Length: 282
Image (cartoon, rainbow, N blue to C red; front, side, top):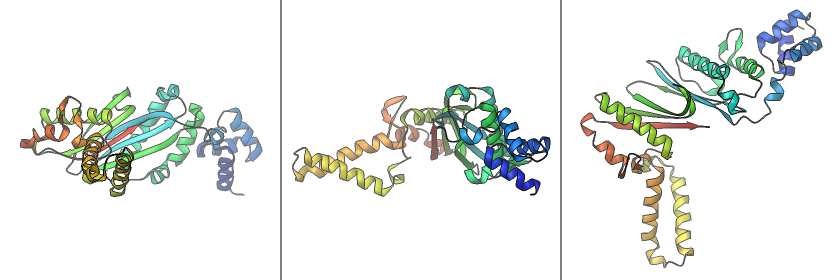
């Protein structure tokens, strides 16, 4: 059996990283069983078992260069691990890898990128052994900057670019000044607090709207309201529904008497427009 096949077999049996398996085989004359025992003694053969455990804590990181803007969410098992420098340095290193690659990728493509003598997936496995907890790449969002501007807000921060909640706003403007930067930052805070589903009504899924209308109409009719006024009541209920889940129609957190749309209208001289937003949280 070739050394490549031996490394593959050892990785499958232990979940350990490429380099750890290669080194262990070299130290144990290519004996698989002795290599497994050696890796177990070093705590490196537990990754495969840890991968079965629930990972519901973790952190979200923000990274950007002139070409792309990136959000990465990695889950861990405990909040204790997520706050550690080992975990936070790991998350930062993943962000740097994405920026260095400098193109849009999905999670599977990113995990298969070459890293040192293995892949990013191998890097994950080695960190699982090091941290002692299951780690999962939960979300990877990469946006091309093009003509867009971005602003972000972190809630429950661990570092200036890492926290438990990150909201990201993509917008366009003819002049990026202090007023616009303040507005965009406040809108990010609004998104984190109010958790809208979409920018506007038109962005909502039609089937989703249809289901909600049916639910609300059934509730109206079941309450004993006559069918001839049901549509009018439904119109009011759907308007309230949209005001709760669409960003532009929500009451602005810093001025509850105005909607986000009306606040943005005040910056029309800068031609400020929201393109999209992202909200990632644990």
